[in-house]
Length: 208
Image (cartoon, rainbow, N blue to C red):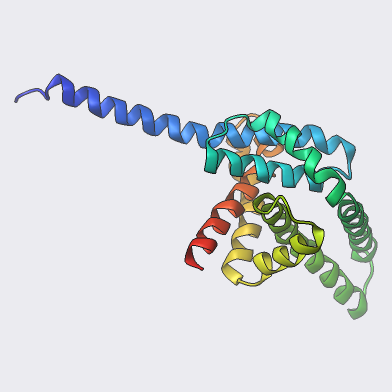
């Protein structure tokens, strides 16, 4: 049996190396952006502008090849802090109130309590794709404002069942599958769903 020529083996090895590095890059950049997101979230109400900053940074990596995913989040955060601060405070307060309602109503009995619990849970679940979509839309249109981002996010999250399901599915699945990475849930729970949203947005715009 004749051995494969050395140049052919080298080409095959080079392709495998490039493929491996490509996959590694798709992990490294979300991890770096997620680490910056975790630091920015120490401000509590800063999570929403930080999420938009993650989206803008990952979009810059995908479209322009900008590899500064960690520091890029901090730079982009400054552009989203003021526009999204009010929305972040309102969302944080609303989500906290819904959680308190669920905890309070879970121990109650009666049809009214069941309906209110289901309503609160439904709003909590719906908030996940909406806020992910808001970050994605803000990342894609950095020159806009909340008045344009919010309607775009509602359309992106709820205007199509597959899109909304994909965003929610990414948010739910990421903590589970990221357990294989050290501190994976902490580093990837925000960046991977946002990255999924960016990919979906690009496909949506291409099909339009």
